[in-house]
Amino acid sequence: MADYLINTTTMNYPLDKNLVDNVCRAFGLMDAHELSNATIRQMVGIVREIERQADCEYVHMELGNPGLPSEQIGVEAQIKALRNGCANKYPLITGIPELTKAASDFIRAFLGLTIPEDCIVPTVGSMQGCYALDTLISQLRPDRDTILFLDPCFPVQKQQSRVIGLKVDSIDIGDYRGDKLRDALEQKLQQGNISAILFSNPNNPSWMCLTEAELRTIGQLANRYDTIVIEDVAYLNMDFRDSNRGKPFCAPFQPTVGRYTMNCVHLVSCSKIFSYAGERAAVIAVHPDLAHRHFPALTTRYNSDGQFMRTLVYQILYAISSGVSHSVQYAMAAMFKAASEGKINFVQNTHVYADRARRIKEIMAKHNFHVVYDLDADNRPVGDGFFFTFTYRNWTGEQLINKLIYYGVSAISLISTGAKREGLRGCAASMREDQFDALDERLALFDHDFSPKQY
Picture (tube, rainbow, N blue to C red):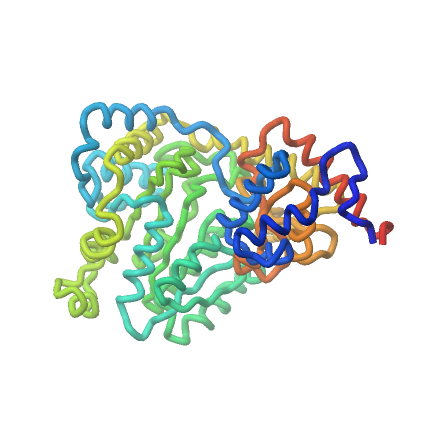
């Protein structure tokens, strides 16, 4: 076996084992062998501290940071709102009228759905939106104590469920595409304990995309078993394989479960489509039939009329944050409005992520890495986009992250996403042009040190 602590090139990699292990311990891990259990933010902190101590720069693929400038229309609207004095006033918890109207128009323009303004509420990013929905859904029906995830998933969403006390169940969507999905879902829903189904589309981390047929299946079963569906469209219209996407109010729209069930909620975030992640800007959009539905358990708990939307806004969101930053609501309103009017083409703007992912995958393939979730529905290759999954030869994710950390490349383990397949999740978004050569060199060194001929 190659000694991966011996430098075989003029680079400063592999990094010193003691340095890396000591940093891992400082962040609550025993050593680098526990990195597969690290949260995303733990991993970010660990890598940043290694960079500081080792005086190096990683190829960062662990955090889903946008790699594009924020949409200036939003920035200017937010600055104008601050200069006009919004900072000394509490924002409307229901959202400023400009935002709810713009969000309603945006959803109609790009998802082809009609969601009235009173069924839309701003949240401090989709993270808060998901947490608020989990909290509310956990209180609707005492006999339904479990959320069903279509894995792999964004790890923190499961963490939120556990914090609230909701049980978690899952289906690895990679193993149940097309007609197989109905049987797998129905087997879970027949148990009677599922309160909601949660998924992202495109999928974080695999970048698989559910088809209209699969979404129809989910919607039909949600109707049959009266189950709420939480659809996270953080990467709205970022399946770049469909070149016709992105024209407002024109088909093809983003595929959505909202066409097939009234029991649905959509998380619409500005973080990726408008590169506005730092301002924590998103909205929850609730199908009007669900928004206006009354639940006896909510009436009892809050001494109210038990309406879904009012409880979400005035009980849950009010208790969590008392509203979304006033100025960012103006930024969201401006960006949603501009996109609906064709002044921002966010699909075209974010297409660069597909180019970056393709180049990263080509470099990886050259050095015996491969994509883990490689096929979409109908055996179609998974598209290139914001995220991708990978491993090295037949290694487990734990084996790979424990070694790759010494080579200045960071990612997160698929274990944390609930994936049944072994490997890591990488993010292509923040790759700079000058980093592709660095990635090539580091993976070449890695492959040199760990290829079978070295054993």
